[in-house]
Image 1 (cartoon, rainbow over the protein chains, first blue to last red):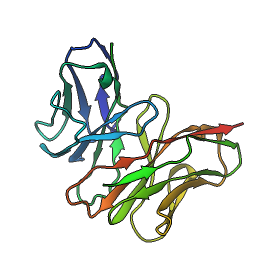
Image 2: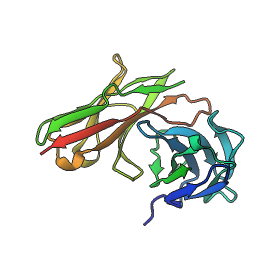
Image 3: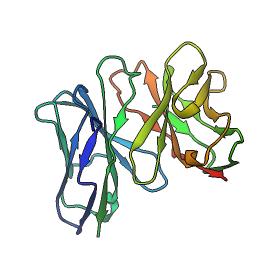
Image 4: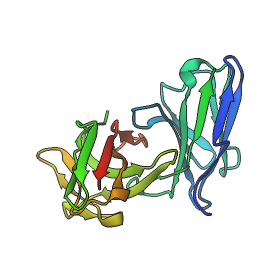
Length: 115
Length: 116
């Protein structure tokens, strides 16, 4: 399978714990995005990487959230001191570089439940 | 800032009938427009996009969409719906030029239910 993969698919944690999610984009895609999707809503942009550089962050990305893409390949999203409001589906997407009209390809998501 | 409105929460249609899912957008400048579909517990799958040129865009699985600049709309259509088309549909927009803003803005989605 050469699509975008995410791990884990599901994560249940207790409030206050730290969690880390991983995204492996399509290999030739140098642009990588993280989104958050809550029930009944569309995906909301969190952050964007071009190669290893994090070029844009949403105001939704509080200081408890950090994302990395150390070698311009896979990316990790860490949430520290999780809160119940962090419960959501976290989606990763990637696309080829160049023009912005190139569509983003999404992974299956990581569903986070904070108890 | 860009935004998308999908005014209907749910669209019910009988199998074999035409399907329309509505989307209007707001951007500063010209838009790139996208439709995605999401099945339960799955990520979003790309259906089609409008960049420039012909206002009628054809995509995957028999879907098409019509760009209407004066009405700022990009409605998704399928001439004959299938039960397997039952899913959640999202419209998304990106502004051109984006001045470094690479994000897509998504609507809240429309649940499509195709009745056998």
